[in-house]
Length: 206
Image (tube, helix red, strand yellow):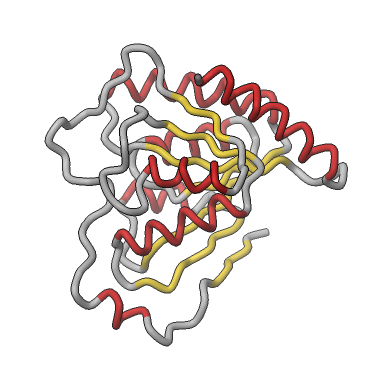
């Protein structure tokens, strides 16, 4: 199944690149699990780099910089000479390693949510997908564990006819069997906190 998906992805990306202006870089977004076991993270890193290398250095990587797959992808983008764009789902989003990578982003889009929540993650997924030529999904193939998670992003990309390249190397495992869902529960104040807020804003760094 993954082979068919990869072939469709390759055909779709070639078609998109043909119709784009010659100077337009390919835009590659990422979605994936956070709770990767240490050995799995190394396997995923190798496969992500193999997928990105043919587009290097003139490509754009789009990520929310979540722990795990997102940060592995972002680091690979920068190492291969690509341009990093970041979507920040909420004002309280991100920890130490997130900020280190954020400082190296060329463009940053901040969504108007105060609190990280399934609603914020779902909105971030929509932005990722609508601006991408290809979605790289570090996904174990299991159903969604909550709104805004990896499986839901893959489903959304499929609906929009955005090609998906699934990465889940043989022997890969998730790090925490009893981990909480990928998206935390929505707090009671989320709906009220986001009403009337300005739309997302961009920061561009030269």
